[in-house]
Length: 411
Image 1: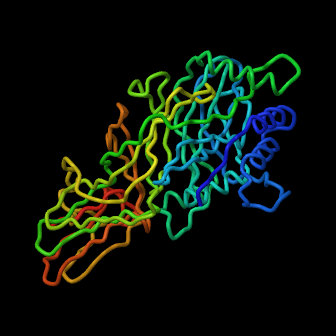
Image 2: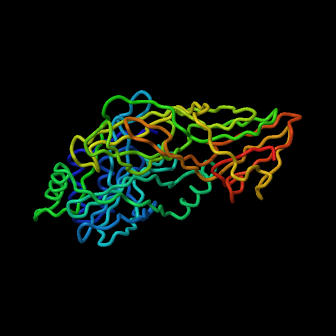
Image 3: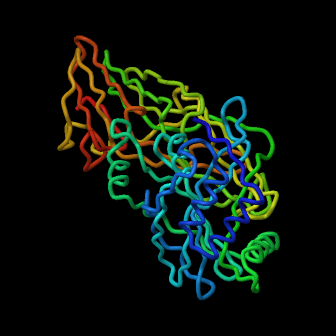
């Protein structure tokens, strides 16, 4: 299901008033009900205040005595013919005021969260923004909330069961622009009859800037022993859920990017892709990704420009360069190595993600990404009848079923 929603001035005003008077949980429910009339719940249904997930982390040294922290769920709207968003609304769903760098913010279930879960196959993209004095910082992160056990890897299931997502370190606070300062003051003024206080962060709306761009992007790697009759088919299906970095820029849509965090990306074309790598293949696997820049025309977002991966084609092919060989020198030396003989196959992999840097460079921003093996991203090793015995293994210390990289060697 595609999400189509907009946040009106009335919705923003409701959020401003209620967060000031009643707290984040009530305000989140009111804004979601007003901004997302999508039929996910009956009219008048209550929004649960029970946490769907808790986001925890540290924003670093506070420039002032306290900081306002708001959790936004990213809602793509105005989709083009390929299903890629021309607008992204960051809908506030939770908030807190902190007086020390560490935070732990429960995010209650809501219509916005449920719709984001449906679109992301159980994974939701969040942006956490903090303002302390006249400085701000922000970080994006995907959170597995309701992934089917059949489609998840071990790391996703463990995070989902714990109900808490630990965020990476935030970038250092930096001064807000004049437009951001004005937006915060206006939001606080609308929320209170008294003097404005910078403890409410207005919702952010990103608009597509320029044309979409596609580029080959690294998604994994393949190792096949140099023995006749062996092959490995790398599958990349429509619920691949790649985790990929994104960038912010204060003023330049073609450069001066800083990393803004990570998002979870699901194939926009709902297709299945694969490539069969034959005897002796030691290759990276690439797919076509679609990238879009966005602009904050109002001045309420963490930066002036944002660059995101917005879709994949799932077409798989050999990439450039050559990945490192098996660190053991051979899988037979790996205590978890397994013999792999002719007329047999192996396709059971649920390993954690391998993170790559430099998977693509678009508009001056270099992306990084990772893909954990699931039922939608997998290796299918096959040995033809009569093929010599080889060995399969994973990264050092990992069993094959819990490894980010799989190797196949002759000894």
